[in-house]
Image 1 (cartoon, rainbow, N blue to C red):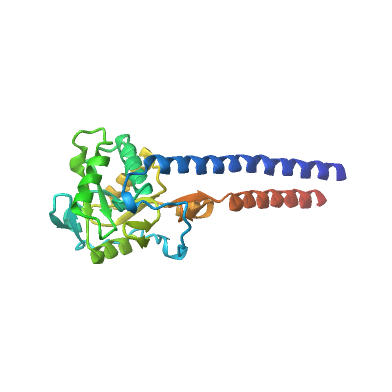
Image 2 (image 1 turned 90 degrees about the vertical axis):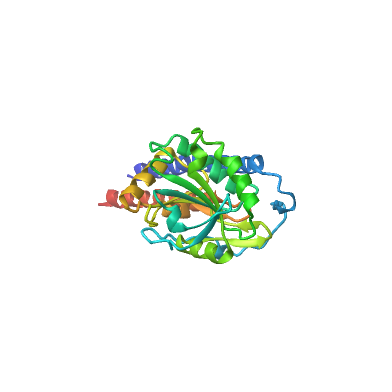
Length: 287
């Protein structure tokens, strides 16, 4: 009996190590790839580019997302498009809308959010323009009309549909309207300086009536997820969020403006599960 228990313990320890090793490898790979993407996607913005090698103090409790699934956004929020025309949000939302809250001087993450969203849209089962639209709204009240025009020219060219740019609109707004919109979708960010913000990485699907339908977290999006979000927005049926998974397995990294894989938590969870199984089988053997 003692020999069997010993062999069982050894087997569980090996299982824990086998489960943990891929997680360590994945965490390192994800960190390296994310760092390379950040460097490769940085745009020349002069003094507005934040030097990540310099330490900065960030109140992490200010940054994040308070999910507002099923809640209504204020339709009287005023936005100015890249042509200088002002619209209410209600006038903009005439169909399911993929909302990207970004700022146009962002040196890295916002570019990845928009570029990767465009790639996902290219392969999504629904047609941009006919079934849904995309809008980018800057939460930097110092972004200008020219900034919106430059961003629109840079990112809409990723779309494979030559008419796609007509269905991806870019907006700026004043501080009051930005706050009303970001509060309505639970988007919490912090200003670090001129054209310099720390913010969560995600896109949000809104219905044509202005209901918050689904959050897609991170900077990489699957065409399937975009398609599901569009379908849910059509039906006005809020989707299931994966925030709990993201919040547990990933910590927000304000320095790199991304969610970082928390290997300590995940490996700890795997270890606890392994120990739980060990004692479960041990007690069964005693019976």
